[in-house]
Amino acid sequence: MTEIASPHISQPRILVLGVMTGKPGSAPFRIVEIDGEVVCEARTITDVLSIAAAYGITVHDLDDPDVVRWVGGDKFTWVPRGPRP
Image (cartoon, rainbow, N blue to C red):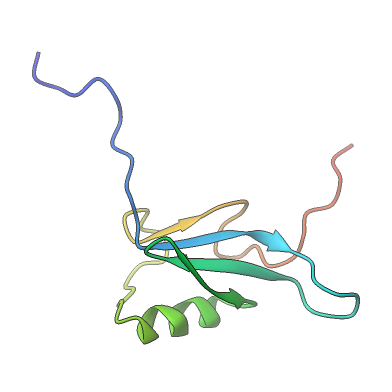
């Protein structure tokens, strides 16, 4: 048997963490890490693409797990999730 027993887990350069709430009255945000370093607070998909470009990373597909890992929601999740019943 030549297959690997465990599935492939990618190590993308960009990691976008779950939605956080800041000070009252401020917009929610997501922390963005590039190469394991916290680089910014993103409030939109455009922010993620802009910071990636600033670090020389071209993103062709935001759904490619080898490029971007979305934690706590996908690329459309920009508000905190409410409590579940």
